[in-house]
Length: 494
Image 1 (cartoon, rainbow, N blue to C red):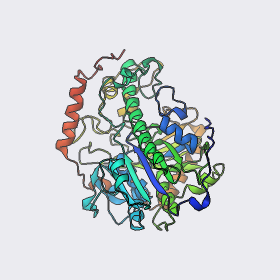
Image 2: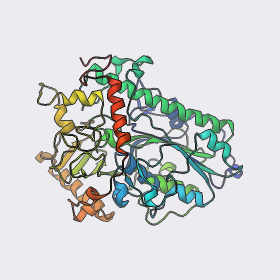
Image 3: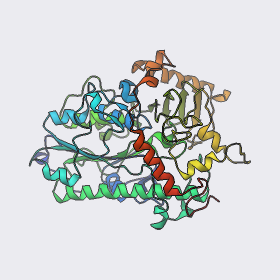
């Protein structure tokens, strides 16, 4: 476990504390744990995140509710699990305004609220009854928002970066001097130079997100409002690489998270209890002195932050996904539910005869195996079909192959979740226990799949993308690589 040493700071006098603190929510797009300096990554430079961790709390077991942009962000806003949000459990769908969200509630209570760039997305919020994005009204920048705020009014602001979402400009990472030879490639991808280079391009965008967050903090500090602002910095789901984003393995769901708020969070606090992003909504509402709606499923983080050693009720976390991209004939979802604790990750693939990464041939969007974002890493693994190398994982099967109904991983021994123990008799009792735990959670949270495991509900929910735009993105990405998809532009896959 790393340690963040607290910096000396001047405590705010109680009479100077605002009745309602400002809230600044900084959210990346496709950033995985542990890619930050404070977590021990030796390459990516994240001074802003590291500062928040040093002056506040850093979390080692924070998880998004779903490893897909729109359902993850819907869970952040509403404090409800994706399966409790009807159509919003899918990507590119509709978010109903009947589920209250913290931005709307704070705005009604007198907060000045706004967002820039990516809020709840992608999807159609207007069909759900919203007049603007659920994350707030659009502003061109935080500076524009901060200038427009009425004097003395508390604010909540959502900074939704589009980094480090693909597409990437090839070689940006290595051109900044990041060392190719030092990249630690996760075990579910081949450790070759072009994959390392792809990871460096991802790191480049992580650093850009961190840098922009730092600029916002500087504005708050200059205005004397840094210490009366709850600052949360995190991501919506995992890195856009094979077997990460859109998967319930750790690289799809385990998120960087730091929270700074000196009046209630001591500097240098390490939190290893399990938290889910449904916990943000009740935390923000409680901090503002507002009542938390009964329909919220999350639990406030403030008791945990006052005593990080008390993990009562936070010994595990529940995860899920439904339809990510529209990449299966018939608009089909790939439903999964999971429970993760200190020792094990148990995943249930509810309809295992479907392709987890999307159909082998193009259906509607992205391309072959469309739940995996297009990249040189993906193309390389696609070319490995049928190849087996002694002592090396079957990367094609891990990424694209069908999966059994149940998966069980001993996470401390298998950090990349490569060895499925579900059929190992030595783990029969563990499997049975986690199976029961997951069943109980699904029932308690009114998950349709608790009683109808193969429900077609999320298969039939409207899919609402602009296909022309998506196809343009794909064409631009392929043109950027100028492929022959089996080689990087400058870095060969050797």
